[in-house]
Image (cartoon, rainbow, N blue to C red; front, side, top):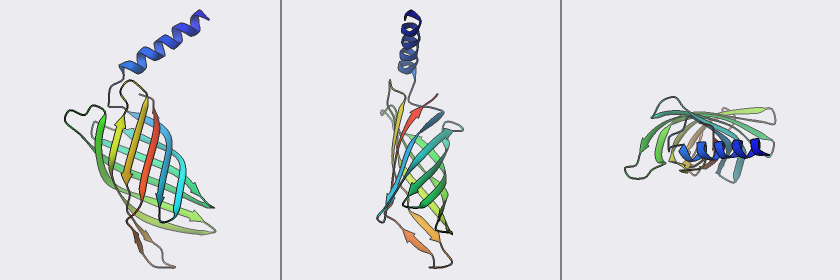
Length: 152
């Protein structure tokens, strides 16, 4: 019992000492637009202060999407934990024997809750789907949401 209390106290102190910047976070990603909502695991990793990569494997009605994004992050003066980000990426949608490749963009906000190991993100993710069967289609109304546990 005493050991559990000490461990819990150490975790609490560690959590409170975390700052707004983090290195890796893992959680849930949601990609919603055009009547479809994809949900699945999401990971974000900072390679340096401003450069991050994000990967998601999401699912929706028999379709699986694998998404990889590069994100350049910038700070807001006086807003601890809040960052803006923008960058390019790709997605591969696969289902019913067909695969569609899409070029993606991303523009959004990332908020690392001070004093808690939680990061929340909201972003805009336009996509240009390159499909040889039905032609290329552009979808501008795609919104992403991420809720992740911050490891470090």
